[in-house]
Image 1 (cartoon, each protein chain N blue to C red):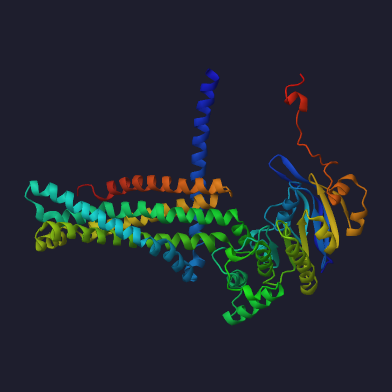
Image 2 (cartoon, each protein chain N blue to C red; image 1 turned 90 degrees about the horizontal axis):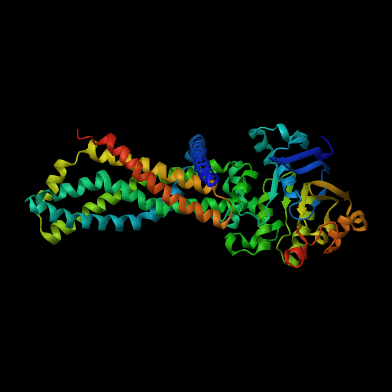
Length: 266
Length: 264
């Protein structure tokens, strides 16, 4: 068993003619929490979808647990996904099921466990995210942070080796933000999983991840441990970490000269 | 001038190709649903749930409409038949119109706007909120888990609703014709019994409603599954479901009637 759960070598991906990701190299060791950061539309969610097998790389190699995702067929992909969890941006809970039903869903679909054992497992997973008491609520009755935690409980229901998080911090209040960050770290450590977090929340993720990849315009601009990233002098990383208005990423969308647009100059 | 005309013609061509292409995608979708129907029959409680949401919850509108359509048929039929002194045939007129045509067609139109639109909106929103993608990431095939049970639930409900519609209609015709106007009760029922043929009339009506059920449900499911994941996309898809399936019902009805009742 290789030490690396995810190995990406020279990966490129294009939507039709538009190149979205270019020569990506990324490694995730087992047990690590990896952050993929970058501004909106830089291709980081695409990278997550590629790891999850929702799309196939245009060129290069992407291996998850030694399996090459470019050549995987549907059956093998579904077998692999049973060992993978994904947390969607807003939880993506099934709105026609209770919290309990949502967490029980993967267990009911993929195992033949008796209902009382499913019940115990669901309560254990819900307890891990602190929402055992909310088991009979419907998703519409949950706050954003609670929904995210229920979705997390659902994605760890089958004890996966890998969890992918798509913007787990988006739209959360500071308390929920801290809770979610801690949960990701704690669950990764206690369940022996590997976590890939796609996020643009620098402060929260730098607190708990092991390694960071910065993506800008489809290429990996910088990488390193949180300490290295904080100390980085690369203009893009500096702008991102410190949230500056101007830098390599300009405030203004490309436009003709302001004076020309106002009719003050020819 | 020529240019804009050419552009217009090109637009027509583009739209036609687009339509045909979409029909092809819908047909492939239909095949996929049939191929993935096995699991939903092994877990029949999933289908029963959909029979409840599509069928049982449509009962009120179907029953009330059936009653009123039957009552109107009773009034109008009596008006016409009495000119020829044939008001005893009222039962025949009411029951044949309902069983052959109005039952399947009107029930299907109501079903398309009540259950079809709900199916499209639900699937479209499930897609917009990434529930479908989440299911795929959990290695659960959404066609087998979400689409197929809804398909069979609605297809099973449709003929039952059409039958109830016709039954309520006959009752409505009886209320107006016999109870209100005073047509002879014995001949109302006995002529109806003599004239309505099980195979020729009832069975053909059932076949119609099954075909309509399949058409409505596939259109509704496909539109929902294919909808752009935005509020505007879902609302447009819902409208398209009602429009397309209503037209499909009327078109199919003509074709089926032409095959079934050729004056033999």
